Image (tube, rainbow, N blue to C red; front, side, top):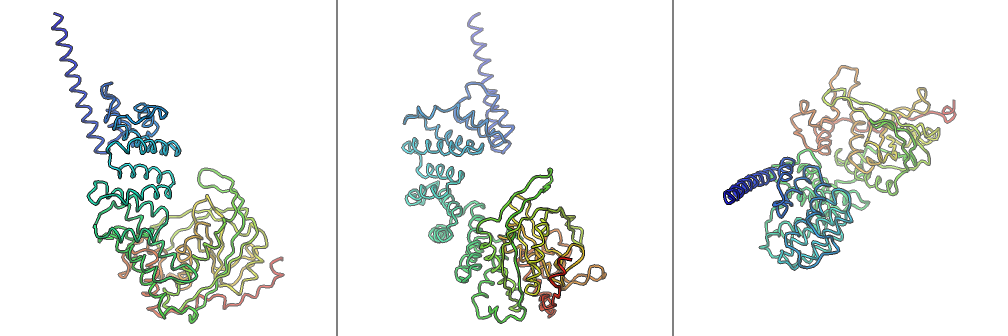
Length: 531
């Protein structure tokens, strides 16, 4: 009878173990299908016999990837000895525990611990027969994720130098090297590295190409916005960025659009030619930029009012002036050499104390809906604002106002086409105005976008005329595709403005000098401002 009982017990255990094996295999299958929450539930249901590798690695990773990084950390730490007890005789499988632990410790915000765990893995397992490249990749990725890309790059270089072309980790190693070069803004080194490995005809994950294209495009832009234009450098980087885009151009309409990069190549060639002669432009536009030193106000960003206390960022004006140079050169190119633009920037030692909540909608189409935004009231800084604009009233066609709006929603606005000297009473003749968030002041496209609204305002018939507009606001947006003309197919915004100038403004030989609104003299007297 006792033998029969033992036999039955063994059979039950065998059946149970078989059932648990089925659960385990199902959990692994769910993990492979990226159904991490379901996989985690099944892994949690397994008994003690499954508290080993790789079941616990899968269990922890399932929890981590289903939004429970802290639980992943607890599971992994239970699988490992304390760091102080670490020696050289650990199971090789612990390597994978350490790396996964470093990953989720970083996710929960403890960068120092993540680096410590990853370093343990790197130091203790480099003599275990593991591919050296794998160790370098894991150590480097942790450092990159923790914001130490320069250190990671230095650590990775011996592995880059030693790796064989037949290594199974070659692509992963090279991909990480490219990521580090991009993180470090090392455009020249990245360019040289890509040329060096070009004969290998390697294929990298899409995100690597996105980073490279962005890096090269940025390097090209920098070459075009500096005081002394380096057209050859710009052409080199824009061409390389363009050549990295797959044939189907998956980034259409974005900053990685091939049409945009091709446009910049042509733009750079123009700037390097004799055709670029802004000093000969017939339409000489003058801009005056005022930046406020401080913003102290209450702002409602959607979750109740909060106090804002900002000062103008260090270096912002220098950055803005570079963006303005690129903007001015783009205007010259758009207009076939007819327009030049110059600017004077002044920091107003004033404090803006009020932020308004405003709204905007496209009067041509309701496709975009109503856009709500926050905009500082420049006049809340005091009467000195009116005095400053009055002094420049006949020296500027367009006024640009920059506010230190760090932490507030991004905004760039084309304002009313006249200066309000005295609220609701005294105004200048037509003068364009652009209002910029401090982040917008770092992007030439914001200037181009808002000034094109001034172009639209100048050449479109009055809104209440019943006539069709010549230039439809925001036509470049996908939501406006019902209005797209035959010459436009969803190219980038910067390219759209070039096409609109060529296909409409220049094709119809419109008088671009109408943008020189300061030719209408503002005869406002100084004493009128104080009445």
